[in-house]
Amino acid sequence: MISYDITEFGAPLTRRERPTPVPEGTEVVLKVRAAGVCHSDVHIHEGFFDLGGGQKISMASRGMKLPHTLGHETVGEVAALGPDARGVERGARYLIYPWIGCGGCGVCRDGQEQLCMAPRFIGVQRAGGYADHIVVPHPRYLLDIGAMPAAIAAPYACSGLTSYSALKKLGAMLEREATVIIGAGGLGLQAIGILKALKGKAAIAVDIDPAKRAAALETAAAAAIDGAAPDAIAQIKAAAGGQVWSVIDLVGSPQTAQLGIDCLAKGGRYVIVGLFGGAISLPLPILPQRALTIQGSYTGSLGELKELLELVRRAHIAPIPTAEVPLAEANATLERLRAGKIVGRAVLTA
Image (cartoon, rainbow, N blue to C red; front, side, top):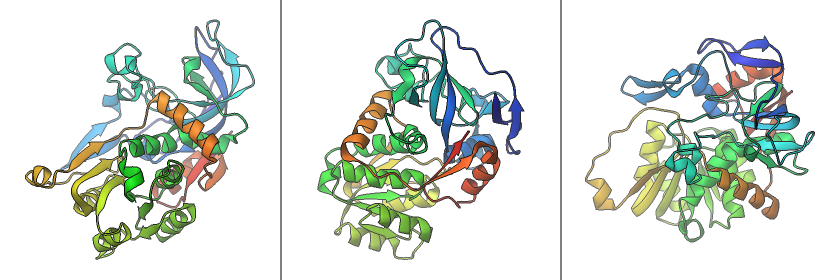
C-alpha cells in the first residue's frame, strides 16, 4: 500500500510504500476512495495546538507516533474482512466514523466516544485516509452512503458532523433566532446548509475572505459580513434583527472569540469549535451579569453522524464546493489549505 505520512512534524509528507495490512479479528481493510483534507490536519502536521501565551499541546502528548498517516474524513470500499467482522459487504462503500474511543469508559458507554480520554481516533492515533488502504477496527464504525459520491460523503465524517453537533447545542434558538456562524470554510458552508435543513431561522456568515463570503451567500446564508470591518459588530447585530442570541465560532482565534462574545445579547450562547489557537482575557463579572453561556463542541458522536446522514438524504442537502485531487498531491493540497486558498473542501482520491 501507498501512504503520504508525517515523518517529521512540519516537514513535507513522505510517500511510503509497504505491504497492505491483513485484517485480524473484527478489523476491516478498505480501499480508500476519498479522503477529505481538514484544517485540523494542518495543526496535526505542525505537531501542536497553540494554547496562547507561548504554551502548546503537542501531538506526541495526545498519543501520536511517527511516522503517521493523516486523514479522518474517509470513504472506503471494503477490500478484506477479519474473521470476526460482520455486517458489511466486500466491495461496498462506507463512510468511516473516525472518533473512536477506548470502548470501556463512561463516555464511550454513553455513546460519546469522541470525548474519550484514551482515544484511538483514525487520522490522529490510528493511521488515516491519506493512503490507498485503511484499517478500521470494527464494522460498527462503517456507515452506508448508498449512491452518494465518495468525495461528497467523506467530509461529513468531520466538517459535517462537527457542524451538526455544534448546531444541535443551540436547541430551540435555531428556529427562533438567526445564528451567527464565524468562518465560512468547509465547516462553515456545511453549517449553513445543515442549519437550513434543520429549519433554522437564518445563518449570518462572518469571514475575512471575500471568496468565502460569496460562497456562504451562494450556500444560503442570509448575510455575509467581513469580520475585520471596523463596524463588524454593528453589521452582525443589524443582520440578526438587533440582537444576537447564538454564535458558532468555527475559527477559534482570539479575534473571532472576542468578536463572537462581544456580539451576544444577555442570555446569549457562544459555541466554540475552531482550533486555530491562542487565548483571550475575559472579565469574569460579565459572565453572570450578561448570563452568557460559553461552550466548547468537539466533533460529534457516532449516533449524530447517523442522524446527519439521514438528514442529508431526507432534506437533500446540497453539497459544499468540493475539489477532487489525486492522492499524490497531498502535500500541495495541505499547503493550499494552510494558506487559506481552498473554498469548501479538497478531497484526495486514490
